[in-house]
Image (cartoon, rainbow over all chains, first blue to last red):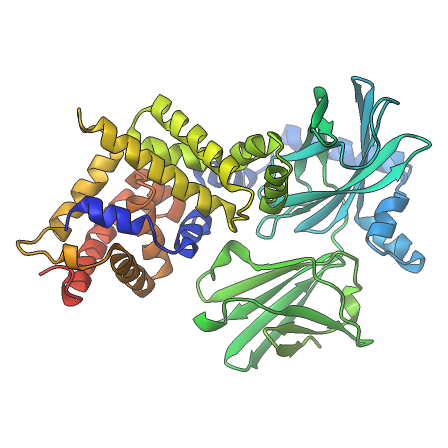
Length: 309
Length: 185
């Protein structure tokens, strides 16, 4: 056999092997390794003084940085008014605006947890542009490993504003404290995809919000696998399973059952990285509407119910 | 941006779809093509041709996942370009890669004509399934993506020497596997 015959046959292998080779969660890159090394260095005296000054400034400022809900985001996430205040701790206020070509883009706030963030942004347009969400700006996320998507969720004819929700999931990285870049560009739309502006609106902001998640150690044998723990937050969860047999690694059914018997929707679920890490298979799920992590009764994977408490 | 949204942009015939595909997968495509062609300009052309291929394929197709569909197009186009280029000379990472495989695939008698290409692909898949996930990734990074040893070592967090030793073992295993299945004698 010639190597070219082999190479051509290799070119037709099932795409799952290619995906595994692309996404394989191997060692950290050298850059990441350097970052970790750097972060373990002892802080210098100057850094300690700077940190102390920052703490003093924060204390002096008190709780003057007002945190409030963007109504569209609160409605989008189905947040009941009773839970608004406690969940507001997981909001990072941004409030940054830029106007170019008569279009004002504002990134208002982000709400999330360690692995998921919902960002709300608005774009105010001039009179000559149709306001139908089909004529749109396209957000592009920078500096973050993970997937993202966006919805144009509301149109206000009076203020000529469209509201966007950009949702980000980074199932194997911590988003809290991360400096995120968000760029809007390519404002175009309509039947012929007319370009109304070629400007770019670039934003950079820190995801500083409180982690409202809880970690529950389970250590249970369920069916023919072992469940280590579950991490739950109002907007996402990760279930850590050990020794999940290969034939069960296609997750066809993933649900949570609340103590009142309801089954909240799960917007997206996946095995993190597509393959197990050693013996452990972490399954990530993202909720389209907030849940109360304290009131989860059980998790269901491929028809097998795993009690949480 | 998620693949689903990028594909929606292809369906809307928006050129942003290409820009977003390039943002997300340009690096992996260029690396794959450059490893085969060892020529940045040729690689760039192959990647652009692959994007055109995507533009023509979507719609009606809705590939999932997008990245593997794209990688297959890039690899096929790069190999075609490689074959055209190597009528003149041999100079790429791909040469080094296939030279490594040659001693493990050559035999005095061969039944390659009797084995349909599809069948050979299935046999390779069965062989890959036998390997540990890390060895499988190492094998594909080397022989599908033509990655150099140092890049594979970085991805897997092991030394280049370790990559080299383990790939030699995998090639020997593969020769045994193909011989047992009558692909090689």
